[in-house]
Image 1 (cartoon, rainbow, N blue to C red):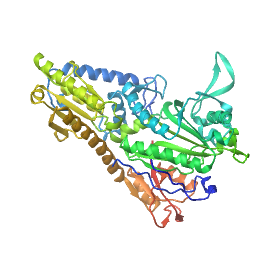
Image 2: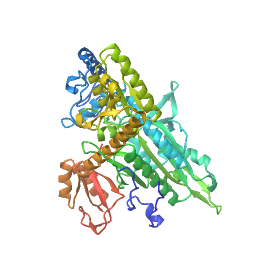
Image 3: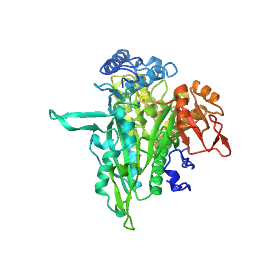
Image 4: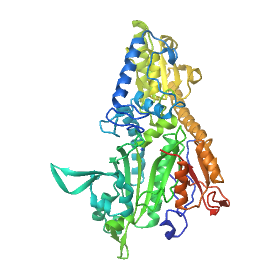
Length: 563
């Protein structure tokens, strides 16, 4: 990552979240379950499905498919016997999303309302996110550690805006070991308070700075309206916490981490997020400034996919986190915190999925290639499986994540649709004729039907590996380009409040000059349901006039409805 440029404005300006910081976005080389308003424990609300129904539907689909599965062919989906179809996105996006999660075996409902069980395949996607970010965190000098899940309530009360912002979402423990606790405990909603309590014990001198740590943990926030992965009572995340000697260092750190998130979104998840600064209204409780990456989902709603906060000295002053500087003077540390959560898994589903199910970018796919062997007779089976075993080994040796589906309970057509539902980027088909010709058929998940098939791909190891790797990169690039085109075609530049209302009513994002008050921002939210997603780092040049107040504006803001 290139060096970050700090704004040249005076330090006093950095203390106000309403003060704009303009900069260029990083160079990118590659081109809140009931689930959605329902109840828990098997009592879904409108638009939801219960854990029982998810499991029951999956079993019914499997039974129906088994009854229909005889013979071996390469017939299209409609003839495969696979019953795991999903509601079309264009008919009901929310139902489609829940169907994909169930059919692709990503998650299920927990027994407590608003919780979810992340199934192995869904967790494998989260692990891919962890793997990439862990490397980046360590490359930039951060160390992993772990803080307790239970936090004294008095800690939360120390920072006024923090307790005000999180109080409605807190889960409290009042009884332990059968006795009422002397002080109630908060189940971790975020860790700034307990981190500062510990930092105060660890930081004494400027030599102890910077202190930069990260933890992978679970978080509990008592949400009223939940949606799997996107907003649940408990979720998984990473949260980084750092302490610095100067404001400049803290600001640089906050910007560096949002850059890392941005690069991850583009280069790994193929999601063209828009990085920027949150408005004062939308700033994290207890922060001076919040940076964000905003992603457009398939229904054109915005998803806040990651945040990085410049906490200033708010928490250090509340907790007395000080150090002795080089001149022997006691100073409060400057801090940051930053996080990405399992919400990003939901973002991947909603950004790339289609009516056939999940569609995963190859770089984060737990399985990049599935091999489906096809045979009818015992003689054909032996030859085909031998060839498949050889292909599997060749691809594994080349570092490609590959799986062979040689189960005999399903037809090839059923398998095709099943692995398409799970979003596997590439499928390799191997039949008796392919063995004879020493070739295979390679099918892309992102291009349905015959246009997405490569016939006669040589089994010769170097040729096959080269072809598969090129196709995986093609898919990665194609998904990013497709998502970028979709995003750009659904952002409308506005110059009046009426134009903003019209754009939001059409389900699009509105971008326009903004310098109006917090009260006027809240008015927009009340009247349109849209919020300021961010002030993008990339800003147009020239004079601008706020479309709401008519006053001069230094920046444009993006408004959208969001999750």
